[in-house]
Length: 111
Image 1 (cartoon, rainbow, N blue to C red):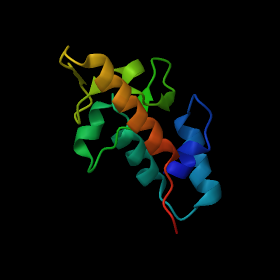
Image 2: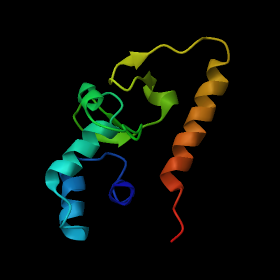
Image 3: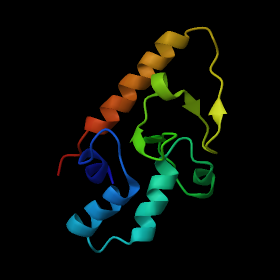
């Protein structure tokens, strides 16, 4: 999934992710791809019904996705609902969360 998302521009269309799998990993079921998109989209309430949601994507008001960054998109629960962060240390917490999110996008497994 990370490879498919890394291959996308800043504004990500669900169908482009599905097309990536069709071209690069045709054995992966479309339903799995759609489920992963739902589970990995922080502001999708449907993610609460899927196992192991990861905070990778944010759905914009125009329906496209973009890479999730806590400083831009806020914090979200595993149920796809916005959460409040404590005011103390807010800037530092957000900066740390942004760094971690950015590192997750560029981290690669060896082998």
